[in-house]
Amino acid sequence: METATVTVTRRGADRARAGHLWIYRSDVADASAARGGATVRVTDERRRFVARAFYSDASEIALRLLTPRDEEIDREWWRARLRACFARRARVVEGADAYRLVYAEGDALPSVIVDRYGDVLVLQTLSQGAEAIKDQLAGLLAEELQPRAVVERNDVRVRRLEGLETRAGVLFGDAPAEIEINQHGVKFLVSPLGGQKTGAFLDQRENHLAARSYASGRALDCFTFNGGFALSVAPACESVLALDISAEALTTARRNAGLNGASNVEFREANVFDALREMQDARETFDAVILDPPAFAKNRASLQAAARGYKEINLRALKMLAPGGVLVTCTCSYHVGEQMFLEVVAAAASDARRRLQIVEKRIQARDHPVLATVPETLYLKCLVARAID
Image (cartoon, rainbow, N blue to C red; front, side):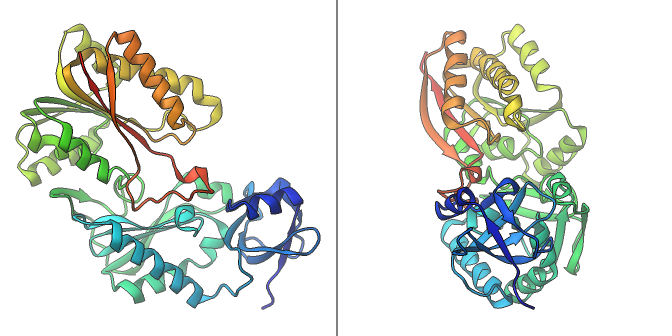
């Protein structure tokens, strides 16, 4: 079947040629020949070739660019791109059997995510175009990696913006209800068809390891979820108190603690904001505090409220931090940039009357690479800081 052509404005073409992978609907001049979910040729208004792309007739992101070359996008094209992703991961992942194999725009394969949990692969197809080739992608993953199963976790809100149903299920093989994974010597239980994201938060994997190298004494882990930071730092600490508001998450966290024989970790169900206030009033102190909250800023309109939330938890953490203690503080809000986050933490330190050294500035793990021309691929910021008095 002949490939349809979508014409974009000069602004859209310039954006694509500068390296971004999204063209918005406002920059589409003519898409009359294209159907939603098709892989199309993109040209400018002078009919010059721009890219090959996924086309969506529902989303504000009308085009997701796959290649700047005028080449056929077929099964073998996808096989080659997947193999390139696998080869890149082989160079950056060690000591873990759960990690991201394909990171959408970060790997120049927009709206396609593949995570590995041992011998089970989890696929997300987050646009009409990716959904149209979902079975092909699952087949290629099965051929190339021979997994026990390929499952889809397409139960995410962003698919509704594409006019797609949300669903989760098995695409290939026999998926277990639960998998035990190993992250740098720490064992976790993962439900590939349940839990957050595709089953676990893989983007903090390397930050868990970094936190272990700094933590000591009595540690506090806020927003612990399945115990990722708490269990990672436990071997370096005398004790760890881990807080989360979700009883369900803490049930899994306690099971993870049992897997690792982590008898020095206490999990407590609590609203972190309330708990921090109560512990500060009780004059409790910690040698290490870890803050890994959910995204406070879902959009630009919520930035001011988010900044207040980040400042409050960092202020209270710093007031409880022992002299020489370490703060590991994170934001996974894309809209909160590194500079803004630094300013929020600095303001908290000033109000807490603490001098704070920034020891490391970190981002998401290397299996979540940042594409230089797509700033949206950088979302996780992690600061390691030390209170020097």
